[in-house]
Length: 422
Image (tube, rainbow, N blue to C red; front, side):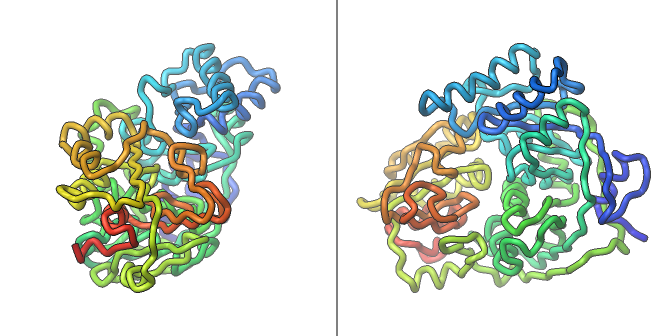
């Protein structure tokens, strides 16, 4: 019986062929923590009497949710991780000196690779599947177990094959493809399954698009999202300064077993807008324009869409124009490198000239932490990944999820706008 790419990755780590439904113990290539979740893992580690990480070069801490610290509590949270990193001379520790959102920073650094098994105490760890890795979120005590043993227990997930056919139209991005899948499946339609993204559209998707695609697999309940290694992946890896290890490349067999196959014609897919209060509440941008939805804030950033291509398209759309008087446009780059590259390319000047404000790399606004909190009854169009009640601030606020082109166009008009009509 053939195997999926996810089954093959686990098989290599276990040393025998494994299939969906099996409970296995697998070694882990990279364990990831952040400033919110790592202190819990550290406490479990130290309460257990453990003094050494079993694989220190397979453990990364990225301070990203509330950095620079927004208050005393977040400063103390960061201090726990910082002290632990210094005590253990952790090689892969990232704070204000080389900061970024973990799911943007670690691929940029060449620390997550094709064929890896990766876990992180953050649900959007599935982002790294864009590189052909198995990557998933786990709880903080599971992370501690990985710190102690170098491995963890998994149930090998069944797989849903998603076939994207055709070439996406202008302003239809990886964000729209995943919002369409979530619309079809619902928020639990892929529960504990792999979403394996394939089809003739994949070669047309940049790595930025693929990261966005896999990032939101969790919003359909999936255990992981994954895209097989190809020339686009190779080019991305070739441009890293260095790689943590050699990539291990796997492809699904032609006779691999899937629980479901979903085919989508992306040539006829318009940008998708997820209305409040679920990522699955998707509608076409044409419908959103008809609904005449006024916005108070536009947010471009997060681990979903805080990459260079997002600032590029926003700058192109806003060039020579101004943000509507009643709108706040907040830009949050995923990493310092993205900020520097966007500055060198002139995107930041163009966006600031239009009326945007640029923050440091942080998760802040996405989870309602800081750098873009919504007030009572305010409406935001956002490139983030969740639009639950109160996600970005007041429980009476509303969030519409969209791609960066739609967000930028909406900043100009003050209403959700189709960028193709500008």
